[in-house]
Image (cartoon, rainbow, N blue to C red; front, side, top):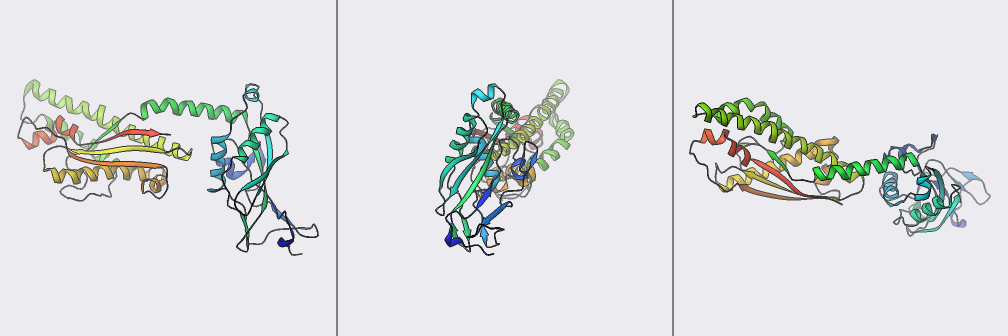
Length: 362
């Protein structure tokens, strides 16, 4: 028997499964306390005028939290507050909340239809659902309709403890990760002898090539010197490779990982990335070189984690703000005119750099 939408005030019921875990995979799988549920929008029936139930037609679109179930779970995890009294007693529970998504996208008639057995859980679940932003309403044949949604809100003590631990670890990590990071480059890299501002090369490639050339830089650092002076110059460059170039790259990896996790958690990230060059060429050339160095670092970040950050770096997705500052050459003069010595020497190595600073995550 066909459905008669125009004659119904209550057009449908859809079950949306939400969970309180730091891993949002359960939101997709609908695995709550070991019980398997279908994905959102699959288990849905529509009563017709005679009270019979039928599966909706393909012409129907269901109410949707903007961004989908993962976005809904992130919102709930960020908004909910585990009742302290129940948390101290290590109590878990599930409250099923029902709400009507009106055709104007607003939610109304929010109420508990299946209690957890604990008033604190029930009250908090209702508060969280009432705070939902406007949802995308149900449509039937392109016409918006009212629809009821039921949201099982899960309070899991073990998940809450894990979330607290992760939050504490992230706060501790911030103290080191948010400090300025300096990355170093080989002479005239990337894309030598060009005046382009962009490059397809990513920093990891440049870093690996630079580290592979360490022995060459160490040997040439002492060129023209003898005895203790030569040994000191070579030792200084070797130490710089191990303590500065390598450490800078490792910190870039950690920062990139941290930014990915912060964005997944719904936080906003902002930083400044500045490019520098040694004063071995003219100022205009060094401006372009500094721009390419900035782009190489952003290329690395864009390609890491399967390209997760690419739409944020391009500006397609909001949440990441990057300030690019191609400073050009460092303003000082070398004590020698020997190009080979300055290219391979410690001071030139320190000048060829990128600095990432003013990092904020909120």
